[in-house]
Image (cartoon, rainbow, N blue to C red; front, side, top):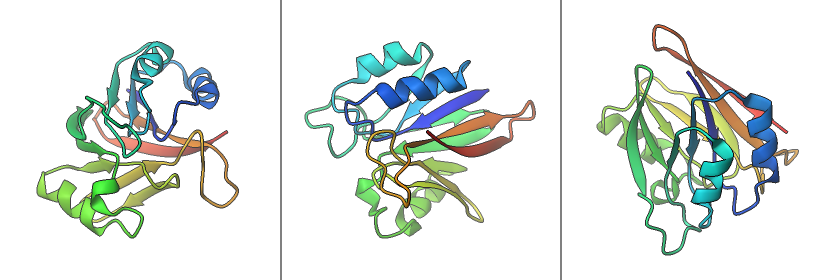
Length: 159
């Protein structure tokens, strides 16, 4: 299974189109918030199943704030991350994911890509396709691939 993990598109979709074209075929897109009301557009562009949660810029959104989903053999918490103070560290969000029995937590909000292999929980942040904040400021996303045995690999990709 191939999963495209994105966040913080903020209504700008040119880089999303590029990422989708580069990575197709894709089995699932996970959007970690700040779609700013463009969920239907993202769904159409993805042309595959979409899991999406609301972010701090998704005002008046009916989207869930977070979800627990299964990808391969992995139990995954998806959230934007702003309720867990991710700008100051990963301790709170990883503790929450561990408490829920999750193997992986996926979050956005910081606009900085990250794959953190913790002892009990893997924390992933795809960065932002629209407003990257890491050094070099290149738009980013993560590709998650699951093997036949259900194990997962992660790759940060840059445009």
